[in-house]
Amino acid sequence: MSLCSLVDEDPGVRSVALAALDMGVLHQGSLYTVTAPAALFVAAILDHPMGLAEHEGHFPWDDGPPRSLRAALLVWLGQVAESAAYGEDLVRDRTDWQWAPWHDGIRRERDPDELAALHACREIRPALYDAVEPFLSSPDPHVREAARGAAVPLLLAPGLAGRVPPAAALLRAHLGAAAGRRERASVARALSLWEVDTSDLLADSDPAVRVCAALGPVHVDRARALAVLLDALRDPRTTDGWFPEPLPGLDGWFRFTVLRSALALAASFEEVAPVAIGIVAACGTSVVDFERGPILLRAFAGGYDPAHPLTFAQRALLRAFVDTDEATGGIGGNMLWFRAAGLPENREGIAALL
Image 1: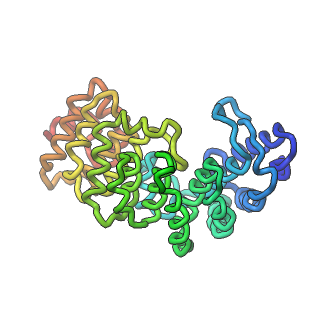
Image 2: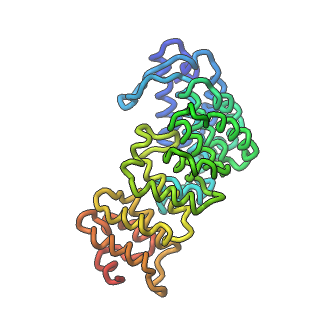
């Protein structure tokens, strides 16, 4: 594939070229030595006149509505930025809804080519952001959303902290009453992840905006932010329905992201225990790697220590696992998480602790 095909006048050629970017240059989030040069090329053509052209997806699963080439390229740059940022801040990574404790070891085992590709993609982030920033104010809402999706991980780079205040001002300009839930929630999430004060948005009239404003790691009002997240987890079906199409940078059910943020924000497991135990006790509606496992690991932060008696909350959580074991594989199905928490990996072993 020639990168120049991305701006070909034939929409079919453009579609194939975009598919090649996804499959050959950033396959399932993997970075290659060609990724950084390709990303710089993509950044350079964002303002190309062909960027206004609409195209349809190349793959059968690309069943969404046609979008502009510019929006598609911005989405791709956001995916490059997300891959480049992963592993840079382990605390931040652990709030990702897909993180599992065994991922840290995998990330450390990179061959020289992988490391070279990673460093190259991190080094070009200032140039990528320079290209993305103008589109944060695009009149096209789809382009604005794609630009936010790229800007969020780009500005997580340690060297770009100084670009956050003007970017935050650009985004706040779109928080007016005329903006819909999706845009306002997306802006709130961006500000929160950039550690901008979102205290005002924690009192927003829209619960989706309030929750997105609480997703970041730092809050002036931590207790209120945690309460917002826990309220959303008490009604997960409604929470999952807020964004039928995931916000940029988020896949999976929205409640997974809300839960990870709540577990990270809590000063102790006891703060989240009632809601967390309710999730585990919900049998088949609770998902191993994205709900039950992270809850278990938060309850035993630092690992189970036989020298210390179980707290009331820990005991109640383990009882929920035992009680729902037959219906959910509550222990056997969570074996890797029990192992990571330093706990017995079978029902009998857990029951003996109770």
